[in-house]
Length: 114
Length: 113
Image (tube, rainbow over all chains, first blue to last red; front, side, top):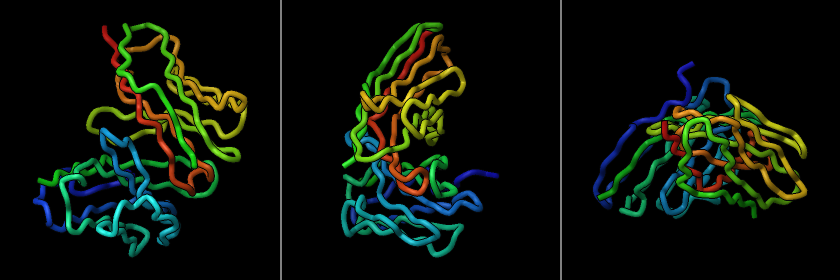
């Protein structure tokens, strides 16, 4: 298995532009998570899905952020409009779900908003 | 709410030294506890886990024991190697893998030859 695949690995965009981050979870995994990593705040859970349904989006910082999971093999995290303070590394992770299962992380997307 | 506190470092040690990275947590109920490791430019990998009080997780020479009485999950290794240099994250989740993880800030470990 190729693991969790994220694209792009790096994204540089101008303030005000729309940014879409993509994630392909491990086949057969039922839970998908989006995290953001910054020096100041560390790793924060933004949103997670179980069986393609958003369960908890309380970590999404603002209405500018939205996430979708149209099917079991694909998810997007969109920021519109982007701002410099959104610059961070965004990680997607997936797991089998249920009690005591390991979360597998992608390599992350480093977003820079200038 | 849930929270995890760990020493942030950087922690610099010589090869073959003994390692301890402290981690304490705040949570209601009975969380599962994890240590993840992040190598430069990569995502996080699970290092070890424990799901109930007094459980000991172990992997690659690392160990951590779930101490409910002190709400701690300290990471230890008897003899570190240069290849152990990485950032280590302590984390918890209430519902196992179905809920998201709450992470500590991470501890940067540097092992010198």
